[in-house]
Length: 193
Length: 164
Image 1 (spheres, chains in turn orange, blue):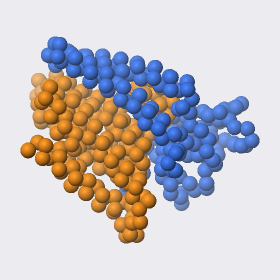
Image 2 (cartoon, rainbow over the protein chains, first blue to last red):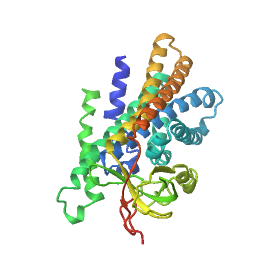
Image 3 (cartoon, rainbow over the protein chains, first blue to last red):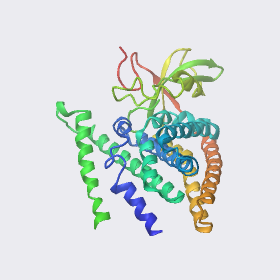
Image 4 (tube, each protein chain N blue to C red):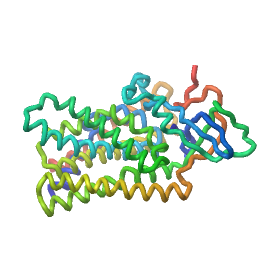
């Protein structure tokens, strides 16, 4: 249990998908203009990353590894991720058309989010069992959502701040992102200390 | 459909596609991307056509007397931000929680990967069923229904930029 907890803290904070691995930067800058939309996108991505990681683990363990098809890994994982997104879209539409109308915007964005593929490929390298890999994926995506919400909050405040004209918009956003990344570097003390 | 607006409403621009007695049928006017980078025009295009996706996301709101809205008009609708997060928690958070809980229990009971995998899939299915119940309750309370805010200004778009 302790190993799982440490692994999840490491995946969410120390090796954060966005600030340490630099994955999912498009949505990081694009969908963080407001906390609510960032939270919605974060939850949708969390769901897709976790579900697709479960499927990717099964495909890797029961199909690619036993038959020596490792060279097809990236293509296969992309297919699995696209299928997971389609599954999610169909399921949410079936579960509640109202929710689908409201949340459907996030789903196409997730398919092209490199964080999903990045986490799946990291799992293959780490050779974990099913539960550990699922928890790792879940924690990684929670870390993604956390950073999205934090950054959205900062950008909401930035929108009200007197920013010099040359730095207004994305430039000040990138500067804030770099400061946030440096702040997250402090979490690396957890694993080494 | 979603864009930055005042703090109390998440707004989106929709087009009126049908006007029936007391009901307006609306179609979101959105791109399939966040629209914030140079690749916005190409991003996500391969995942089904945008027209088909938007058509699938048609929805209706109660027609308000005296507005005189016609087919083809662009209007702005909005929902409370709190509802957006609540809906996301029900749709995505609940199934994930049950899937992870089921996987954890199966791992401690059986220990094998296959059993854990099957338990996670079962937990996910149960979670989706529970999400359906939760969404029905939320829908019945009327909280999920977007409300008419105003007519869209000429050139106004979801990204907040003028169309040229």
